[in-house]
Length: 446
Ligand SMILES: Nc1nc2c(ncn2[C@@H]2O[C@H](COP(=O)(O)OP(=O)(O)OP(=O)(O)O)[C@@H](O)[C@H]2O)c(=O)[nH]1
Ligand SMILES: [Mg+2]
Image (cartoon, rainbow, N blue to C red; front, side):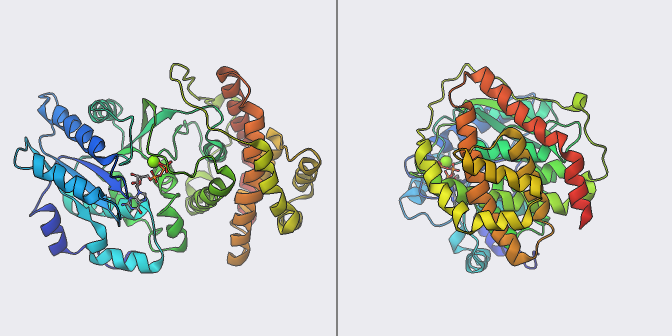
């Protein structure tokens, strides 16, 4: 619950300027991106310039606002250099750096245990909703390499055309990539009728309007326990899923591939992915419960209602991530043997638990049906367990069940051509749609 303002009136004035109400704002959250931020700022600047110079557009003033929260490299120096070179020479665009660690609201959040890009996003939504009142806003990652100067104007046009409240940049991914995304998208299909679930629900680059900012900044998730996850890897799903359930108009723009300054976490799937998955699932399950009234009353999807959309994007070469399947399996197996198997035995229905036993006998492979049964029950269980058990469930879900699902996804699609891989992914989503009535029954049982 947000009791105090995140940023004091006088802090806003000194940071943003007196009564600044730009039409369009380009935000970028930064943390140790000295090698990438200059390119992002330049693309943001040139992109904004193109938008405000276009007589067809009714936006005339623009700002660029990088929000840094604790870079220990020269990121802030690079940004200040950019400001020195461009401000004053402005053609209606001003850059203002926010060093969040210097603000009153940050200390509180930090002490409460909040970390990550989401804290910058919380401040960003707060600023738009309470001070800037800007019509259209961007947040693009500050480590983007593949961004160019057309990303901003193209998304502006698309957002206008589609009258979107939230626009998501969507990227080509190698077919193997995105096992968390595929599970989440499939889970969301259980709760959404006649609507397309966006492709990049956790892509991280967005365009949003005032309405989205207002909803996000008022959310009770900030300051809650789940909010700690929503401020880190759960931040993207928080925004997308809340917007879906709030009935926002959501559009997507395809921007080729996403190349960014990846940290070393890739190549270490077994360590990194479950940690990320745990946070993402926690936020997603929480929101599914919070918005239960918005979806539980709708009729189940019939087979014909299912959109089955998953764009076949085969004109972009995407490097595939190296993955050692044996290593993956060996890292997940011990969790299952040491406690997680027992937990699942206790809490799942007999038939669903049998999938775990069968997978254990078949090198941890879970069929599509098995994965759909497991995730459906886990998503519902989240709402029936007491808090300590819920934490245990999240661990079991993120390490054992996600581990097995990830391994199975890799085994399923890695060696198929793209079209057949995508068919598999659609088929996977359909399995969850079929279980919609069962999911509702479980959610209503409580
Ligand atoms: N202000 C702020 N920005 C952050 C923080 N953590 C990450 N970011 C920024 O958020 C964006 C996404 O973070 P990344 O670390 O690139 O995460 P990712 O894109 O999911 O994964 P990789 O790039 O592969 O590491 C980047 O622009 C980061 O600079 C933070 O604690 N504070
Ligand atoms: Mg990145």
